[in-house]
Length: 341
Ligand code: CP3
Image (cartoon, rainbow, N blue to C red; front, side, top):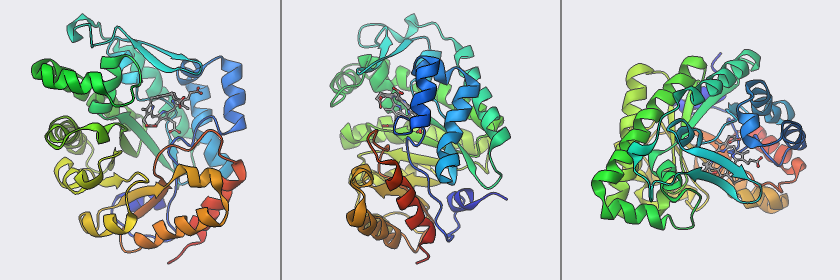
């Protein structure tokens, strides 16, 4: 019994629509905050496979989403490539040494840092009902590179975009190294039980068109081809946030089985512009889930209706906000479950 989500990602136009929410395992949930306080921090949680499995399942228990997304982070890949990783309260993540001023070759890889993540996947799979889909994920090489180069999040990815122009060979080597680790990492998650995987490209929108081809499309195409060759039945969802008018090319050229759309994309445009029959995922504005009420319902219905003629996984356009009222999440998921249009 593969379930509504996996059926949709494989190309079926099902009713009711499957739904899950990006960042559904996290700080808007009191049961997450309680476990985080007990274990003493984000990385400690990620590396405690039993706790991480529990957090992965928490939103499913409360709301019954169709997919459980692995509780981990895209920055586990740089950590396994040998950078130090710290999540400082109120500051976001820090990686060191930064590749803006240290050569890639100076890092010593620590591949064992990936193994506990596979144990989390196994622990989730052992507990998850058969009709719920276990979703693995990784960051896309461009987005991961922006953190590895700058050592932290940055507003317009200035340092990384500059490095990519200034020293193309050095930056290509960074992208190639991330791509290789990401393929192994996703394969490890799939072998442990992930049934579909998502590539998060949060900063895809900062690149000029030719750079987008080179640093977004090409490495993602390599990842999709490698996963497809080993695991032909495991769909890959691409989520190039901010890609805008470059989405049709991304969809065609990467070979992803499904496409995640952010909230800036007009669903009516996407329904017409993307390859026919290709499953899409998204794209309600996460701020509407905070606002709730009639406006949220109206716009959620608009998204559902726009994608009625193709496979569609209902989701937000980006991660759920920390201040989202718990009852709004239940109301949204009920609306999606009851829609049969
Ligand atoms: O529900 C899920 O989606 C759980 C797994 C998950 C996390 N991060 C947990 C997390 C996933 C898929 C991510 C992806 C991620 N991480 C992205 C891509 C998606 C996006 O949101 O754009 C990026 C860019 C990161 C890097 C990252 N991790 C940042 C910038 C931060 C700090 C900002 C923040 O929201 O606190 C994190 C920390 C992080 N990752 C938290 C969680 C639940 C918060 C940790 C805490 O409890 O303090």
